[in-house]
Every structure is written in structure tokens, then in C-alpha cells.
Amino acid sequence: MCGIVGALAERNVTAILLEGLKRLEYRGYDSAGLAVVNKDQQLQRRRAQGKVAEVEKRLEAEPMKGHLGVAHTRWATHGVPSEANAHPHLSSDELALVHNGIIENYLELKSRLTKAGYRFTSDTDTEVVAHLVHQLYQEKQDLTVAVEAAIQQLEGAYALAVIHQDQPQKLVCARKGSPLVIGVGMGEYFCASDPLALLQVTDRFIYLEEGDLATLTLDQHAILDRQGQAVEREICQWQHGNQAAEKGSYKHFMLKEIHEQPAVLAATLEGRLSDRRVLPQALGAKAMELLPRVKQVQIVACGTSYHAGMVARYWIEKLAGIPCQVEVASEYRYREVVVAENALFVTLSQSGETADTLAALRFAKEAGYLASLTICNVPGSSLVRESDMSLMTQAGPEIGVASTKAFTTQLTALLLLTLALRRAAQASNQDADDPLEAELVEALRALPRLAEETLQLDAEIEKLSEDFAEKHHALFLGRGSHFPIALEGALKLKEISYIHAEAYPAGELKHGPLALVDKEMPVIAVAPRDDLVDKLKSNLQEVRARGGELFVFADPVTLLEPEEGMQVLHLPEVHEVLAPILYTLPLQLLSYHVAVLKGTDVDQPRNLAKSVTVE
Ligand code: F6R
Image (cartoon, rainbow, N blue to C red; front, side, top):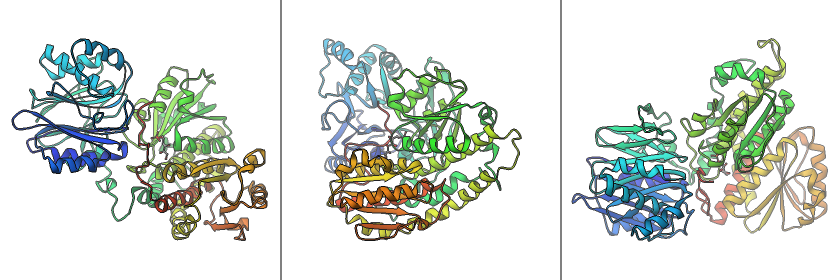
């Protein structure tokens, strides 16, 4: 959801800003722009509609240099994608501002500023903030003081970076509701929406907290918290290496991230399992104390993360015997909820910054839950900071907009949570041996290897994808804990290939969707070995009898074999509880290959962006 970069150095920062934008492009890609203060202390700006490459061309044609600058890649909220609406927005050609988020009271501010003589050249909410800071700067003559006064008047969410040509040694940034980090260099400072944007120049970061305002000069930073008090924030060392932000030999980030799954599943399990059990410390000391009191679980998330939560409901109720509800955050946060006694509130998120999920957590904190836990991929993110407990997935940075490795590592972490809840709920002696837990721990250890084997189906799946390229619709079927996997398969296909796809629990077919089935409707089914597979087989017969074309991913023991109208690919045998994790992989590969055949933009599908920091 929009990417921000800012830089202040003794060297020219244009190339740093541009490289930062390229690395942030996954957050928004409908227009981009940069502004720098040049050596004559004048503000210069280049903007273009479209991807960052367009602004790069503009820069090649009309280069600009400066040691202070801000840049932005946009995902439109207010106003169409166009050059006029692209950031940075200027005020009086003296001040430049970039913004991620939504200013809810912008119309009111706009009318006031219009009366004060400001002329608007865009339809954005951001331009209002640029003029507001400018107006206050006229009065205060200090950029920090002006930004501090301006943000008091803003309602909504923002991450901001601001520069003024009269203060060429100062970069001011602030955040509330949208992420922002400061990159600490040697005699230079940077800011960005995501540390990935700055790995080219530093590996030391300060994660700003809600309401923070930071002033960066060449050799120091000063941070004020939401009460306006000076605070120190920890400088964190980046641990993931720089390759995480590179595609390497892969054609797309999505393919690289699909193939990283064996390694990141192993990383998510590392240090969390002993011989026959999940290590009690895996979820932290606080969890050891709280989990025995949990009588109900409420999971809240969005999109793919929500699908992970849906799988976890099957696990938590079956294995831990604890009632579990799952809801999408955008619904949950606006509902009048009844909170059961001793209920644990769990959020799931790759980014840790999803606006609806974060708002749901804040709402839940007031609603009387026992405690909150987040399963999240980004250390230092808002969800991690604001939850009582966190369990980190170790997927590493995920750049492809379509979530892949984040999902399977979330599932793995959710299974660890399930087993911890099971032990807490069932064993009066917390050290007692639990044969089922031991069996699942062994199965978890085998998971990375099985994922590796499953990925070897890549070439066969690529072949299968040829049957989809001309199709306009697809139906995904699963039963039990594989119904959410069917939902996830359908979501992946629609978001990157733009083929309309729906998912149903296979038993629902005859209650309506069967009417859609004909030879133009490919039907994809996941058929692992479980109690429901015989019922699923009957559902598949219902499809075949209507001339539907079936594509089935099955466990060999199901005895499902290819026949006319039904293609079958066999996955390695896997414990039935872990099967949802493994059966996700072929569906990811299928969507990927269909999208490549259709020639869509796999990593940056139209209308979408990663890290949805607006409501
Ligand atoms: C789909 C996808 C989205 C995200 C959703 C939540 O491939 O990536 O549906 O899962 O926007 O994002 P996080 O997990 O960052 O909260």
C-alpha cells in the first residue's frame, strides 16, 4: 500500500531513492515519483504514471541530483492513477511530502486551506497535508515543529516523509497506522516503509512506533513519541541477508518464494521441537502461563491469512478440544461481539501491518479477552508490538503480492500453537508423554522433505496448466480442513491469472454450484488421505457425470487414478493432519504457471498491492 523512501546524505541520493522505489514496488505500482533538494537549494521533482521504470525513464531524460530527497510508489486510494496524483506533492514549490495511508478529514482541511489561498493540483488527500505543513512552516519556521503541529490536525492513518528546500539538512518523518522505519547509515540517514528498500545502503534500522515523529540530520536522529516526549528507540540489526529482496535465477519472486518453502518451513520449526513434543518455550514464557487458562480461541485475519485461520479451526477443535471461531478482520472489527470467558484472541498476518487486522486487535484489547497472540512474519511490525504474545513465522521477506510461503509457515506455526493448546488443555501433568503429539512432531520434522518432493511435480503441473489458459472460470473443491485449501487455491488463481475461480466444500456441490459444471469448467480437487476421501470421490463422480473436467491432487492410497475426464497427480504420503500444508503447494504452482501462460504480471497483479495498510 504505497511505498515511501527518504534519504539525507553527503552523496547524491537520487539513485538510492530510485533503487528504494524498485524494492518497494510490491507495495503499489500505479505511479511513482521523487523530489530532491539540489545544490542550489531548490526543490526538483520527477513523476510518472505507471511503474517505477516510467519514472526512471523520466530521470534518464531529465536527470536531477541532490543530497536530500523523498520518493514514493503509489497504490491509488483518492484520485485515479495519474501523474498529477503521483507523489511527492509540493507546496509552493518549496516543500515536498510523500504519504502512505488515508487522511479521513482531508475535505475539511482542504476547504480551510483553499480559503487560505492554497491551490490544489491533485485529487489526493496527501496534497492537503503538504499545504498544511507548509502553512504551519510559514508560522513556525522549523520543519519539525510544523510537522508536529500538522499531525495533531490529521485524522486517519499516515506514514509521512517531508523535506523543505530552506532546511536542506533535515528530513522529517512520522507514522500513525502505517509502517515506517529509519535506516541508520554512517553519517547519513534514510527512512522507508520497509527495511527492504534500504538494504542497499544499511542493515541497521529503527522501527518507529505509533505516533512517533523523527527528525533526521546528517549525524543524528531525534524521536518524539505521541505525547511529544523525546524517546530513544532501539537500533536493530537486519538478520535476513540482502538476497531476500532479489529474484536470483528465478523468473518471478512468486516462483522463488514457492521454492523457498522447504527451507522456511524448516526455519519455522527450528528450535521449537524436542524429540516427542513442542518445546514449552516455543511460544514464550507468557504463553506457558496463559495457555492453560484458554477456554476458547478467536482467530481474526484477512485474505490468505484468514484461510490459514480456517484450517486452524479444524485443528484446534479436533486436537485441543477447544472451541475456535475464525472471522475476517474487516467484519469482526465492526461487529458487536460476545467475548467468552478466558478467550484467546489470535491474529494472523504476513506483514503485521494490515489495517483491518490491526484495528481488530485494538478493538479486541478493549473487549475483555484473556490475551492476544499474533502469528506474524515481520519482526517489529505493529501487530507484533501491540500483541501480548507473538509467534514468528520464519518465512523471510515475501515480495510477490500473492502470498505463498507466508501461508504455509503460518499453518506450521498454527499447528505448533494447536499442540501447545492441546497439552495445556488436556494434560494435568505438563510433562506427560502424548503419543499423538509425538507422532505429529515426527510428521512435522518430515514436512520440509515432503515439501521438496512435492515441488518436484512442477513440470507436470506446468503441463496441466495448459488446459487452463483459455478458460474463464474454475471451481476448487475440498472437504474438511482442505476446504480452506480449496479457497486458497481459488484465491491464488483469481488474483494472479484473473480467471474467475470459486471454492466449495465438495459436499455443497449438489446444493447449487453443480449447475455451473460443463466441459468449459475445470474442477480442481484436493484429495488427501482422510476420513472424508470416500465422500469426496462420490462428489467427483457427480462432476464427471456432468461432463466436468477434473484435475485432482491426491494421495496414492486414495487409489484415485487418471482416467478420461480426470487428470490425477499424486503427492507424497503425508500425515493427514499436515496434509493441508502440503496440498497448498501444487495449487500455488498451478496458479503460477497459468498466470505465466496468460502473460499477466505475476508478482504485481493489477489493482492489488502487498501489505494493505488502508481500510
Ligand atoms: C493474497 C494475499 C492477501 C493477504 C491479505 C492479508 O495472496 O496475500 O490476501 O493475505 O492482504 O495480509 P497480511 O497477511 O499481511 O495481513
